[in-house]
Figure 1: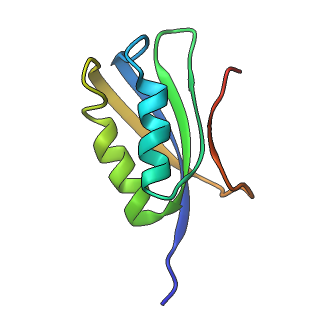
Figure 2: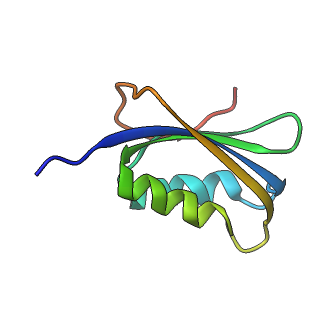
Length: 94
């Protein structure tokens, strides 16, 4: 049984900086066995790329719609992109 591996780019808009969104996203991504990275954007949003099984990527997107305790997610957009060769999920500082 083969599992389709996908990669998505995700933009999270709302009160998502200064509320441990990146650290929480990394923790959830590792929990879901995903690779990629997460970073803050200069416009106040959070951007991440996540790669793994289609089911687990969807779990992370579903979690993102609520986010960590003190966040207030207004909008989540995502698109599939080509997969990359990597084996970790990191917090990026540009």
